Length: 262
Length: 358
Image 1: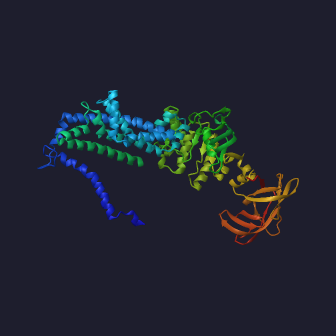
Image 2 (image 1 turned 90 degrees about the vertical axis):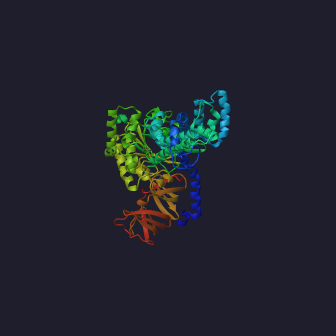
Image 3 (image 1 turned 180 degrees about the vertical axis):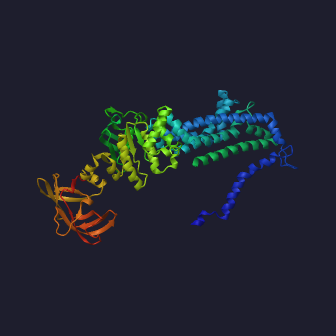
């Protein structure tokens, strides 16, 4: 019986190859970013930080970073507020209709984003929202809702409904129960959802291509343009910066989860 | 204290879930300052009644009145009833003191006043020194006491308790039963207690309401229910009982005689109408008689099985009138229990009671 729990050599090899397959393409970006050449390549003579200097002094790249951050922050706020309320509402009502709502709210990650982008594009033309902060924040916020829904619903599934009953039996109204009992218990789920919603907006590249023209140049869009026009190594630097922030956020999420499990 | 006491009336209460009648036409009056237990097996509707009193279950029909005021339309947060939940439902993200402070925080009680009352409530359950712990750092018995303090700190009109001892081990449960009863006497509130444990019900209550399949079967003080069960279910659920199915063969002014498989027994009290009768007889009311000792009812049999419980022996005795469960004190037991040994069982005519078969 003990043997069944141990992986054979074939399974081990397979597992490690999958892991490498996932990790290697990411790790190659770092050596590319420290190249001493003026095109996208591995360093010839010695590693150099010249492209990092370019990135952090170029107005174009800094503007893009700033835009990406602003859009990510506001769309996260939108996704967290609506996603959390929706998850709590569905949990409280818990009828067949709310099950349907839950599935509907997951649509943005089920429907291919290119399809979504086309639809939004048509609609935004009419509403005159193309190439505006509001336009892209709305889109990123709405498509970030599923992440919040999933994480908040998961924490609510573990929430003991008797805690809410206890609060009410002691005289707490809905708003007091929500603020003092339910919210503190689902906070880790909200934080997790916020992190994922942020990363979603931070590295989103398809919707922005449809909606933006001159005013908006988020980091992913700037990189996309860079790849199309010239193979500038600053792109690799931008990729590293993006990854670093995402990884920090994911580490934060792991830390939150561990803290919650204590 | 008397000013805090309230009576509660449940009038023709019903709760239907589709075709299922969780509670079916229950009427119950709970007097001021009483400790009343709703006792029944799972699915008997006892928790549904408690939840309806608390306001978490909207009844299909009927009324709930506090003193003379109907409270059925009030939401739970406006009823001002303290409640101790099964599993306690303490807030895990708050300390003991914060948990107990919660009902006062909800009511905007001024800080100094709130601190005094929290300390008072914690003293009442002897938890003062643990006020800064989290619920997860407390034992089951301590958590139970926090739940009590939290339910009492806001001077509720009633205290509702939903199987508060079910998660604890037997010995602790017995200790807390004594504590709960003492607490009831000290605070003087009306307590409504739900349990499936008949020992808890017997040891603590002023009055017990026995429920089965959503209906109230019998209600009364523990002694009365134990000594005079109205139905077979009550006799069986509250303690143990032997049941004798007999045929009435003689009616007298002060009792009657009945026959079970040829054996003839006497029973005090009026005979029920009809030809047949069901008699409930507690195992501890049967004695083992010495040879030649006279008694109203005797029957001979052999010990089929026995077990030792320290204070008593439980014997299973096979007789011509069926199998009897007999409990005899172990201290100076008149016979040495052994399988196959012949014994003579005896009981007086007022030891048993006729019950309604159900």
